Image 1: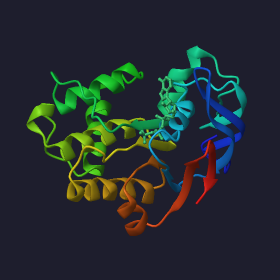
Image 2: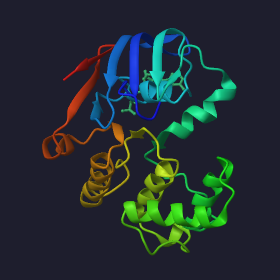
Image 3: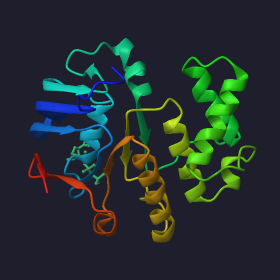
Image 4: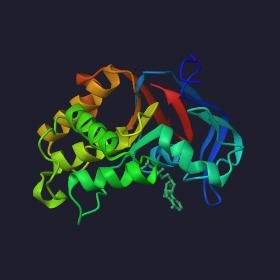
Length: 225
Ligand SMILES: Nc1ncnc2c1ncn2[C@@H]1O[C@H](COP(=O)(O)OP(=O)(O)OP(=O)(O)O)[C@@H](O)[C@H]1O
């Protein structure tokens, strides 16, 4: 599996619903290993619904999809946690546990995903924090960090189990433009090291400054832009 060249994401004839409402029809695209893809579209066009489908928060009812080796049209609910270990998820709001230090937030995730050895846990936490440029913040509580630093911790958390792809939904939406650019650079560094990224964004400066493939949600469809 690790050495295969198959795409990280494949969707074919997928219809994406919110309740009874068809949000996106006949969605078909692939994301290859190590690729960077922006997902754009107006408010309400279906970007979040598409990302939610990929991490099996929204259930795929028609069509087929394969994400990190898991077939979403066949997946059992009990396998969803394993799918989510293979994909990292980053939202706009930071969703850190506010009463725990950075280190404890990250340890919590590692222990919940089966890590037992304390030395391995410490080593992995230092690695991901270095990767996001936050080497010295282990002992801090989230409120002692800036918004940009908190988002770095969230990205570090998403990287803990070496995902094949990061799904990011407006990851810079709550940040000042300058800080947003720095976070975008963190994503670039991670992408350059081989992790695919699918990022929903409203920030058109990113599209200009960080050229990459663009998918657009428009009129109930997903198109290459
Ligand atoms: N939980 C929900 N229940 C019912 N309808 C929903 C739900 N979430 C979203 N929708 C509807 O689905 C459509 C797509 O919404 P979605 O959030 O995927 O769009 P988006 O492109 O991510 O928008 P934004 O840029 O504002 O985040 C919208 O019409 C929205 O009202």
